[in-house]
Structure formats: structure tokens, C-alpha cells
Amino acid sequence: MVRHVTYAIGDIHGRLDLAQAAVSAIERHAGDDHARMVFLGDYVDRGPDSRGVVDLMIRLQETRGAVCLKGNHESLMLRALARPQSQHMNHWLRLGGQETLSSYGVSNPLDAEGLVPRAHTSWMTKLPLTSGDGRRIYVHAGLNPGVPFEKQDEEDCMWIRERFLTSAPGAFDRHIVHGHTPEWREKPEAAQPELLAHRTNLDTGAYATGVLTVGVFPEDFPGGPAELIVVRERPDHEPTVEIAPASSAPEPAAAPRQRNWKTALFRR
Image (cartoon, rainbow, N blue to C red):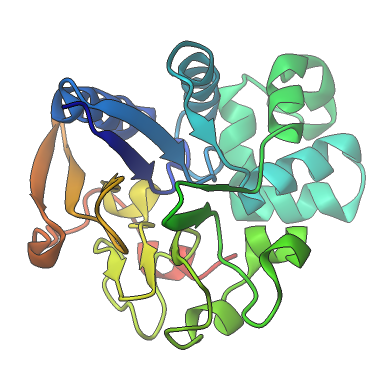
């Protein structure tokens, strides 16, 4: 019997190597099941190959029906490119936009309009904010508790933190699967997902920790993930893949090759 399984992938941030390894791992794990991939946003900025990640997302959307949600960094990029001489460009560059421009071969931000493919910016503009599978809601940052789903604000879906992260079980009628926050006071280890009864946080700071996490959500399994697929960077080698029940998530390894990553993770 073919099952329908949703694979939710945390924030990629330019880590094409980890994203490719995650897709291959998902395909192997799914076998004969119907695999639905939901990417939780933040494809660009900070990591080394944002352009390659966007190309991969577009290809997966076209060939595999992947769902790609909009993250706050896609929003930042669109605002900056629309007004390159404004504070939006400076804000984006401080939050990882410089690495993204480099991946497009852009050295001067004022030249970005002619060098970033219009197909990429058009794709970002059309990205949805949320998706669902009947049991769960998938969104980049989270939802505003107390606000009906149909009235959720676009900025909250991409940017919310404190109000959502501190919301109590029962604040929403479905389990929320999100990314956006690799580290906060209740999630001190950035390289580990946050697995709670009412929400699952799959942002494991891939650009800084070298760990990209995928949650496995079968259609007949309520709430959080049944399993985790953890893709881990190995310097000078192919990334490794670990699969474990969500109740026994793999222990994090030391974060590789990143200077001052804890400080960077606290930036928006």
C-alpha cells in the first residue's frame, strides 16, 4: 500500500551541498511511497551557493511538484533588488545578501538588477506562505496565536518569533512545522531540531553548523515527525546522512569551519 509522506526541509541558506544530499536521502527513504517535499523557506543568504539552491528549488518544483515556501530572506532579497539604493539593500547585505550576490557573480550591488536572473526573482515573488497536509500547517517562521488562520499576516508568517515560540499547546488547532529560529533560550543547541507537542522547529542553522534537518510526516501519523533525516557536513567529503526516530534525534556534532557562528545565528 502506497503511503503519502510529507518531507519538510529546514532552512538551507545557500548550502547547495546539503540540500542535494537531503533530496537524495528523501528519494531513497521514500521508496515506493508518494513523497511530497515541503521546503520551509530561506534558500538564499549567508551560505556559499544561493544561486545553485534557487536553481535546485525551481527544478524540484517543476519535476517533483515540490512545495517551496517563502522565507524572510527571500522577502529581504526582493525588497533590496527592487530598491538597490535604499536602506533595504543595506539591511539585506548585513544579513547575508553579500554572499548571495557573490553567488550570482555580482560585486557591486547596484549591478544586481541586470545579473540576477529575472526568472529567480519572479519565482520568489510567487512563493506561497503556508502549506498543509490535513494534520499540520507548514510555514517559515510561525503563526500569530489568537489570530484565525485565514487572517494571519504575511510578515508574521515570515518573521514572527517570540509570540509564536512562547505560545502554549492548544494555541493552534493543528501542529505547526516551521524553521526560521535556529537558536533561542528554549533551543540552546542550534544543530538540534526543536520537537514539541504542538510545533516542530526544523531550522538547525545549516549555513553555520553544517547540519540540515528533514522531518518525516506520514499522512497517518499525527503531530510531529515520525522520523528525522539529518544531513551533516563532513569537510572534504560527501555529507553523511543519519535517519532516526524523532524520539531519539542524533546527537549534534561540533559545528565545522564557521567563525563566530553563535553571534551570526542571533541575527534576523
